[in-house]
Structure formats: C-alpha cells, structure tokens
Image (tube, rainbow, N blue to C red; front, side):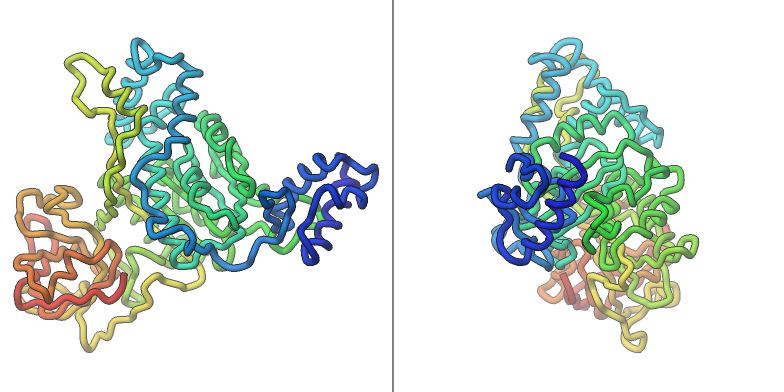
Length: 502
C-alpha cells in the first residue's frame, strides 16, 4: 500500500472514529485505487496506536476509552500467579525442541543446558557478566522466565489497582531479556486496553523474545529494538503517519528496567536519560532479584535518582521505600525485597531436573519457583503511594535512634520485609525465634529492625501487615545491636502497632 493510500485511510479513520465503528469493508471507497478490505484492515492495525483505536472481535475498530485500566471484571485473583501459564510453557518447549529435538532434556543437550544454568548461577553470585549465546538464552529462560513473569505480574497488578496504568498504554522495556515482564504485561491487560510495547534487547535473547510475543492479542503491538540501552533513541518508538495524534507524543506511560540495572555500566545515567521520555503522569519500575548485592544495588540507584542525580530529572520514590520526612534521605543498606507464594513447578524445569545424573547433581537443582524480588517505583509528579507526613512533635525520626537507646518512643515507618528470622534471608539473624522485620522511614542512616518479642492483639499488625505498609509504633523500645550494627525496635506486650495504610 502506497503512502497516499495510507494517508487516506488515516484521515478517514480519524473522522469516523468519533461517528461510528470503523469497518474496513466500508472505508475502502474513500481510498485511492480501492484496495482490498483485507489490505485496509492491515493498514488500520498498523495505524491503530496512533489513532488510539481498538480492534473488536467483529473486525471493526473503535476508540479506546480514556482513563485507567479497570480490573473490576478480572475477578478477585487478578494479579496473582499460581503457575507459569501452560501456553507460554508450550512455546518455550517448542523452541527447545526446534533447537535440540524432542529429547532435549536428555543426553548431551540436557547436559549442556544444565551446565549453562550452573554457570549462570555461579557468575551471577560472583557479580560477573555473562555472554549470551543462543544456548545460554534458552538455559536462562528455563530457569528464570517463570519467576520473572510472576514478579512482573504482581507489580503490574499493584500499579493497576492504584490507577497508574492507562487504557492506552505505551511501555518501554529496557533490557527486556527473554520476556518475563512482556508476557506478564500482555496476559494482564484486559480486552479493552490498547498497548504499545517497545523492548530494548541487544543480545540473542531478542530472538526468543520475538518468538514468545508472536501470538500477542489483537490490540497488543510489540517491537523489539536490538540496540544497547545507552544508544537507543526513545523517540524511535513513534509509529504511524506524519499526521500523528496527541497520543503519539513520544512519551511513555511505563518505563521498565527489570533485572538489568546490575548489567549497566552506569545505571543511574541510563535511567535518567529515559526519564526525559516519561509521560508527566508516567511510572518507572525498577526490578531486581532479591539477593543481597543486586537488591542493595537497586536501592543505590533509586536513591541517586530521588536525590536529583545529575540535576536533570526530578524523580520521587512512589513505593515501597517512601521517604516520610521531607528533606531527609536514608543511608542504610536496605536489603529489602518482597516475597510471594511459590509457583507450581513448570514441566520443562521438572523434566530437565529429572534427567540429571551424576554426583554433582543436587535434587531440585534446576527448579526455580521462588518468587522473591526487590523493586522500586518512581514518578515525577510528586505522587506517592502513601501520602503521610509525620508530626515531629509526636513521633521520633529513625535518624535520631541513637539518642533514644534504652528508651521507649513512638515512631512511624514502612514495613520493608517479611519475617527475616523465619525466611533466613535479608539479615544475618538466622537462629532467633522472634519474628524480625526491616523497617524504614526514609531518614535512617543504619538499618532498623522491628523485633516481635511478645505478640498481642494490639501489636499483631506488625506481623500481619503487607510488605510496604505504613505502621505506627507506640511505646516501642529502642536498642542497639552490636552484631548487626543496627537498631532493634523491640515490640513487646507494652507496644501498640497500627497499620495506617496498605
């Protein structure tokens, strides 16, 4: 179809979109040369993002509704993940079969995949970079695609519940990898949403990403850009004709940096660069694994951005580590991460693990169903998930804990962990029977833990509150922990704790 015909289709659809559903079989009469309706339909699909049009099941096109995603029809379990979807599992296995044959978990191919996974894990915990060839990409997908999919789904649900995802959603996924966040996004979107998804992925993972996204829905438009994040031009995500609508202004509603910050030479500089292309009411999502180095590294990036970076951006932490005290910023380690229920074991992981043999193999070595992740949500419109300002006349700053040792105080802080003594992660505390929770108010210069030594109905909110909730502490005892080089806020039967927000 030539440019003149495309322009005619665009102008006709622009007029009719406010009048009635656009039927490709009706508007071909307005197009020079009278192209076949199928060609008109294909052109409308390509122009739909610019025109903010949804394609309906009957083949007609209508304007996408304004506003944010509505999850009311998705049911109470929207955003929860029990298992990696079977459809995605089949497509990944189809790729494995195409590469190795139907016996891919067995013999030499299975041995090579298992060895690659071991190498990935070793390099990861050593902080070393990994060169991604096609085989390494497949091994990475086997081990990580399910848990990355789950983490992204939970976070997208949180954003949607707060009304932060518009019905016409433009997404830029920087370092998209094998597609965990992308698959989660497309599965999560309701039928009345229009999504323009752009992925930046220079490695061979882009091949698998494109393959997994090939069956996207009618109103899900994806493009993979095989460039480095430092070199990509964000304005190249523009689509359509020269007669672009206001919806196509080059701004993105959601910027995603998932499991990529630790691989960038200067992650703060890269994120700052992309913040310039964030819509005024857009959101930045930083996501990292829960292990100590990458989770703490994410907080370092978050804090550098929130403190102004090089002065070109004005980002604010929306969640979870909200800085409650204006003018204060934290300097603690903040090894903070969320934990969700384990996934069911994907069939491809079970088959690879079951076929393993030899003394070096540990049972379940190739099963990865834990869903634990560190994240940060940033915005540039001063909006925070919890709008709360402490009154210094009534509560103490955690920055001043050193002056309150052996005293009881009132405080307000965010719950930044699940029970660390039970999980055995996030703190060197592994043997204590008392539930232990990382907390912060955004002013602390060292780590603070709330230790539940005696649970009562009046302090049970400490245990029951969700990750990221705001808690009010009344009459809590402050102690210094030499072993941890941290403060413990001891919660006993004299302490009252109220959950002030989700």
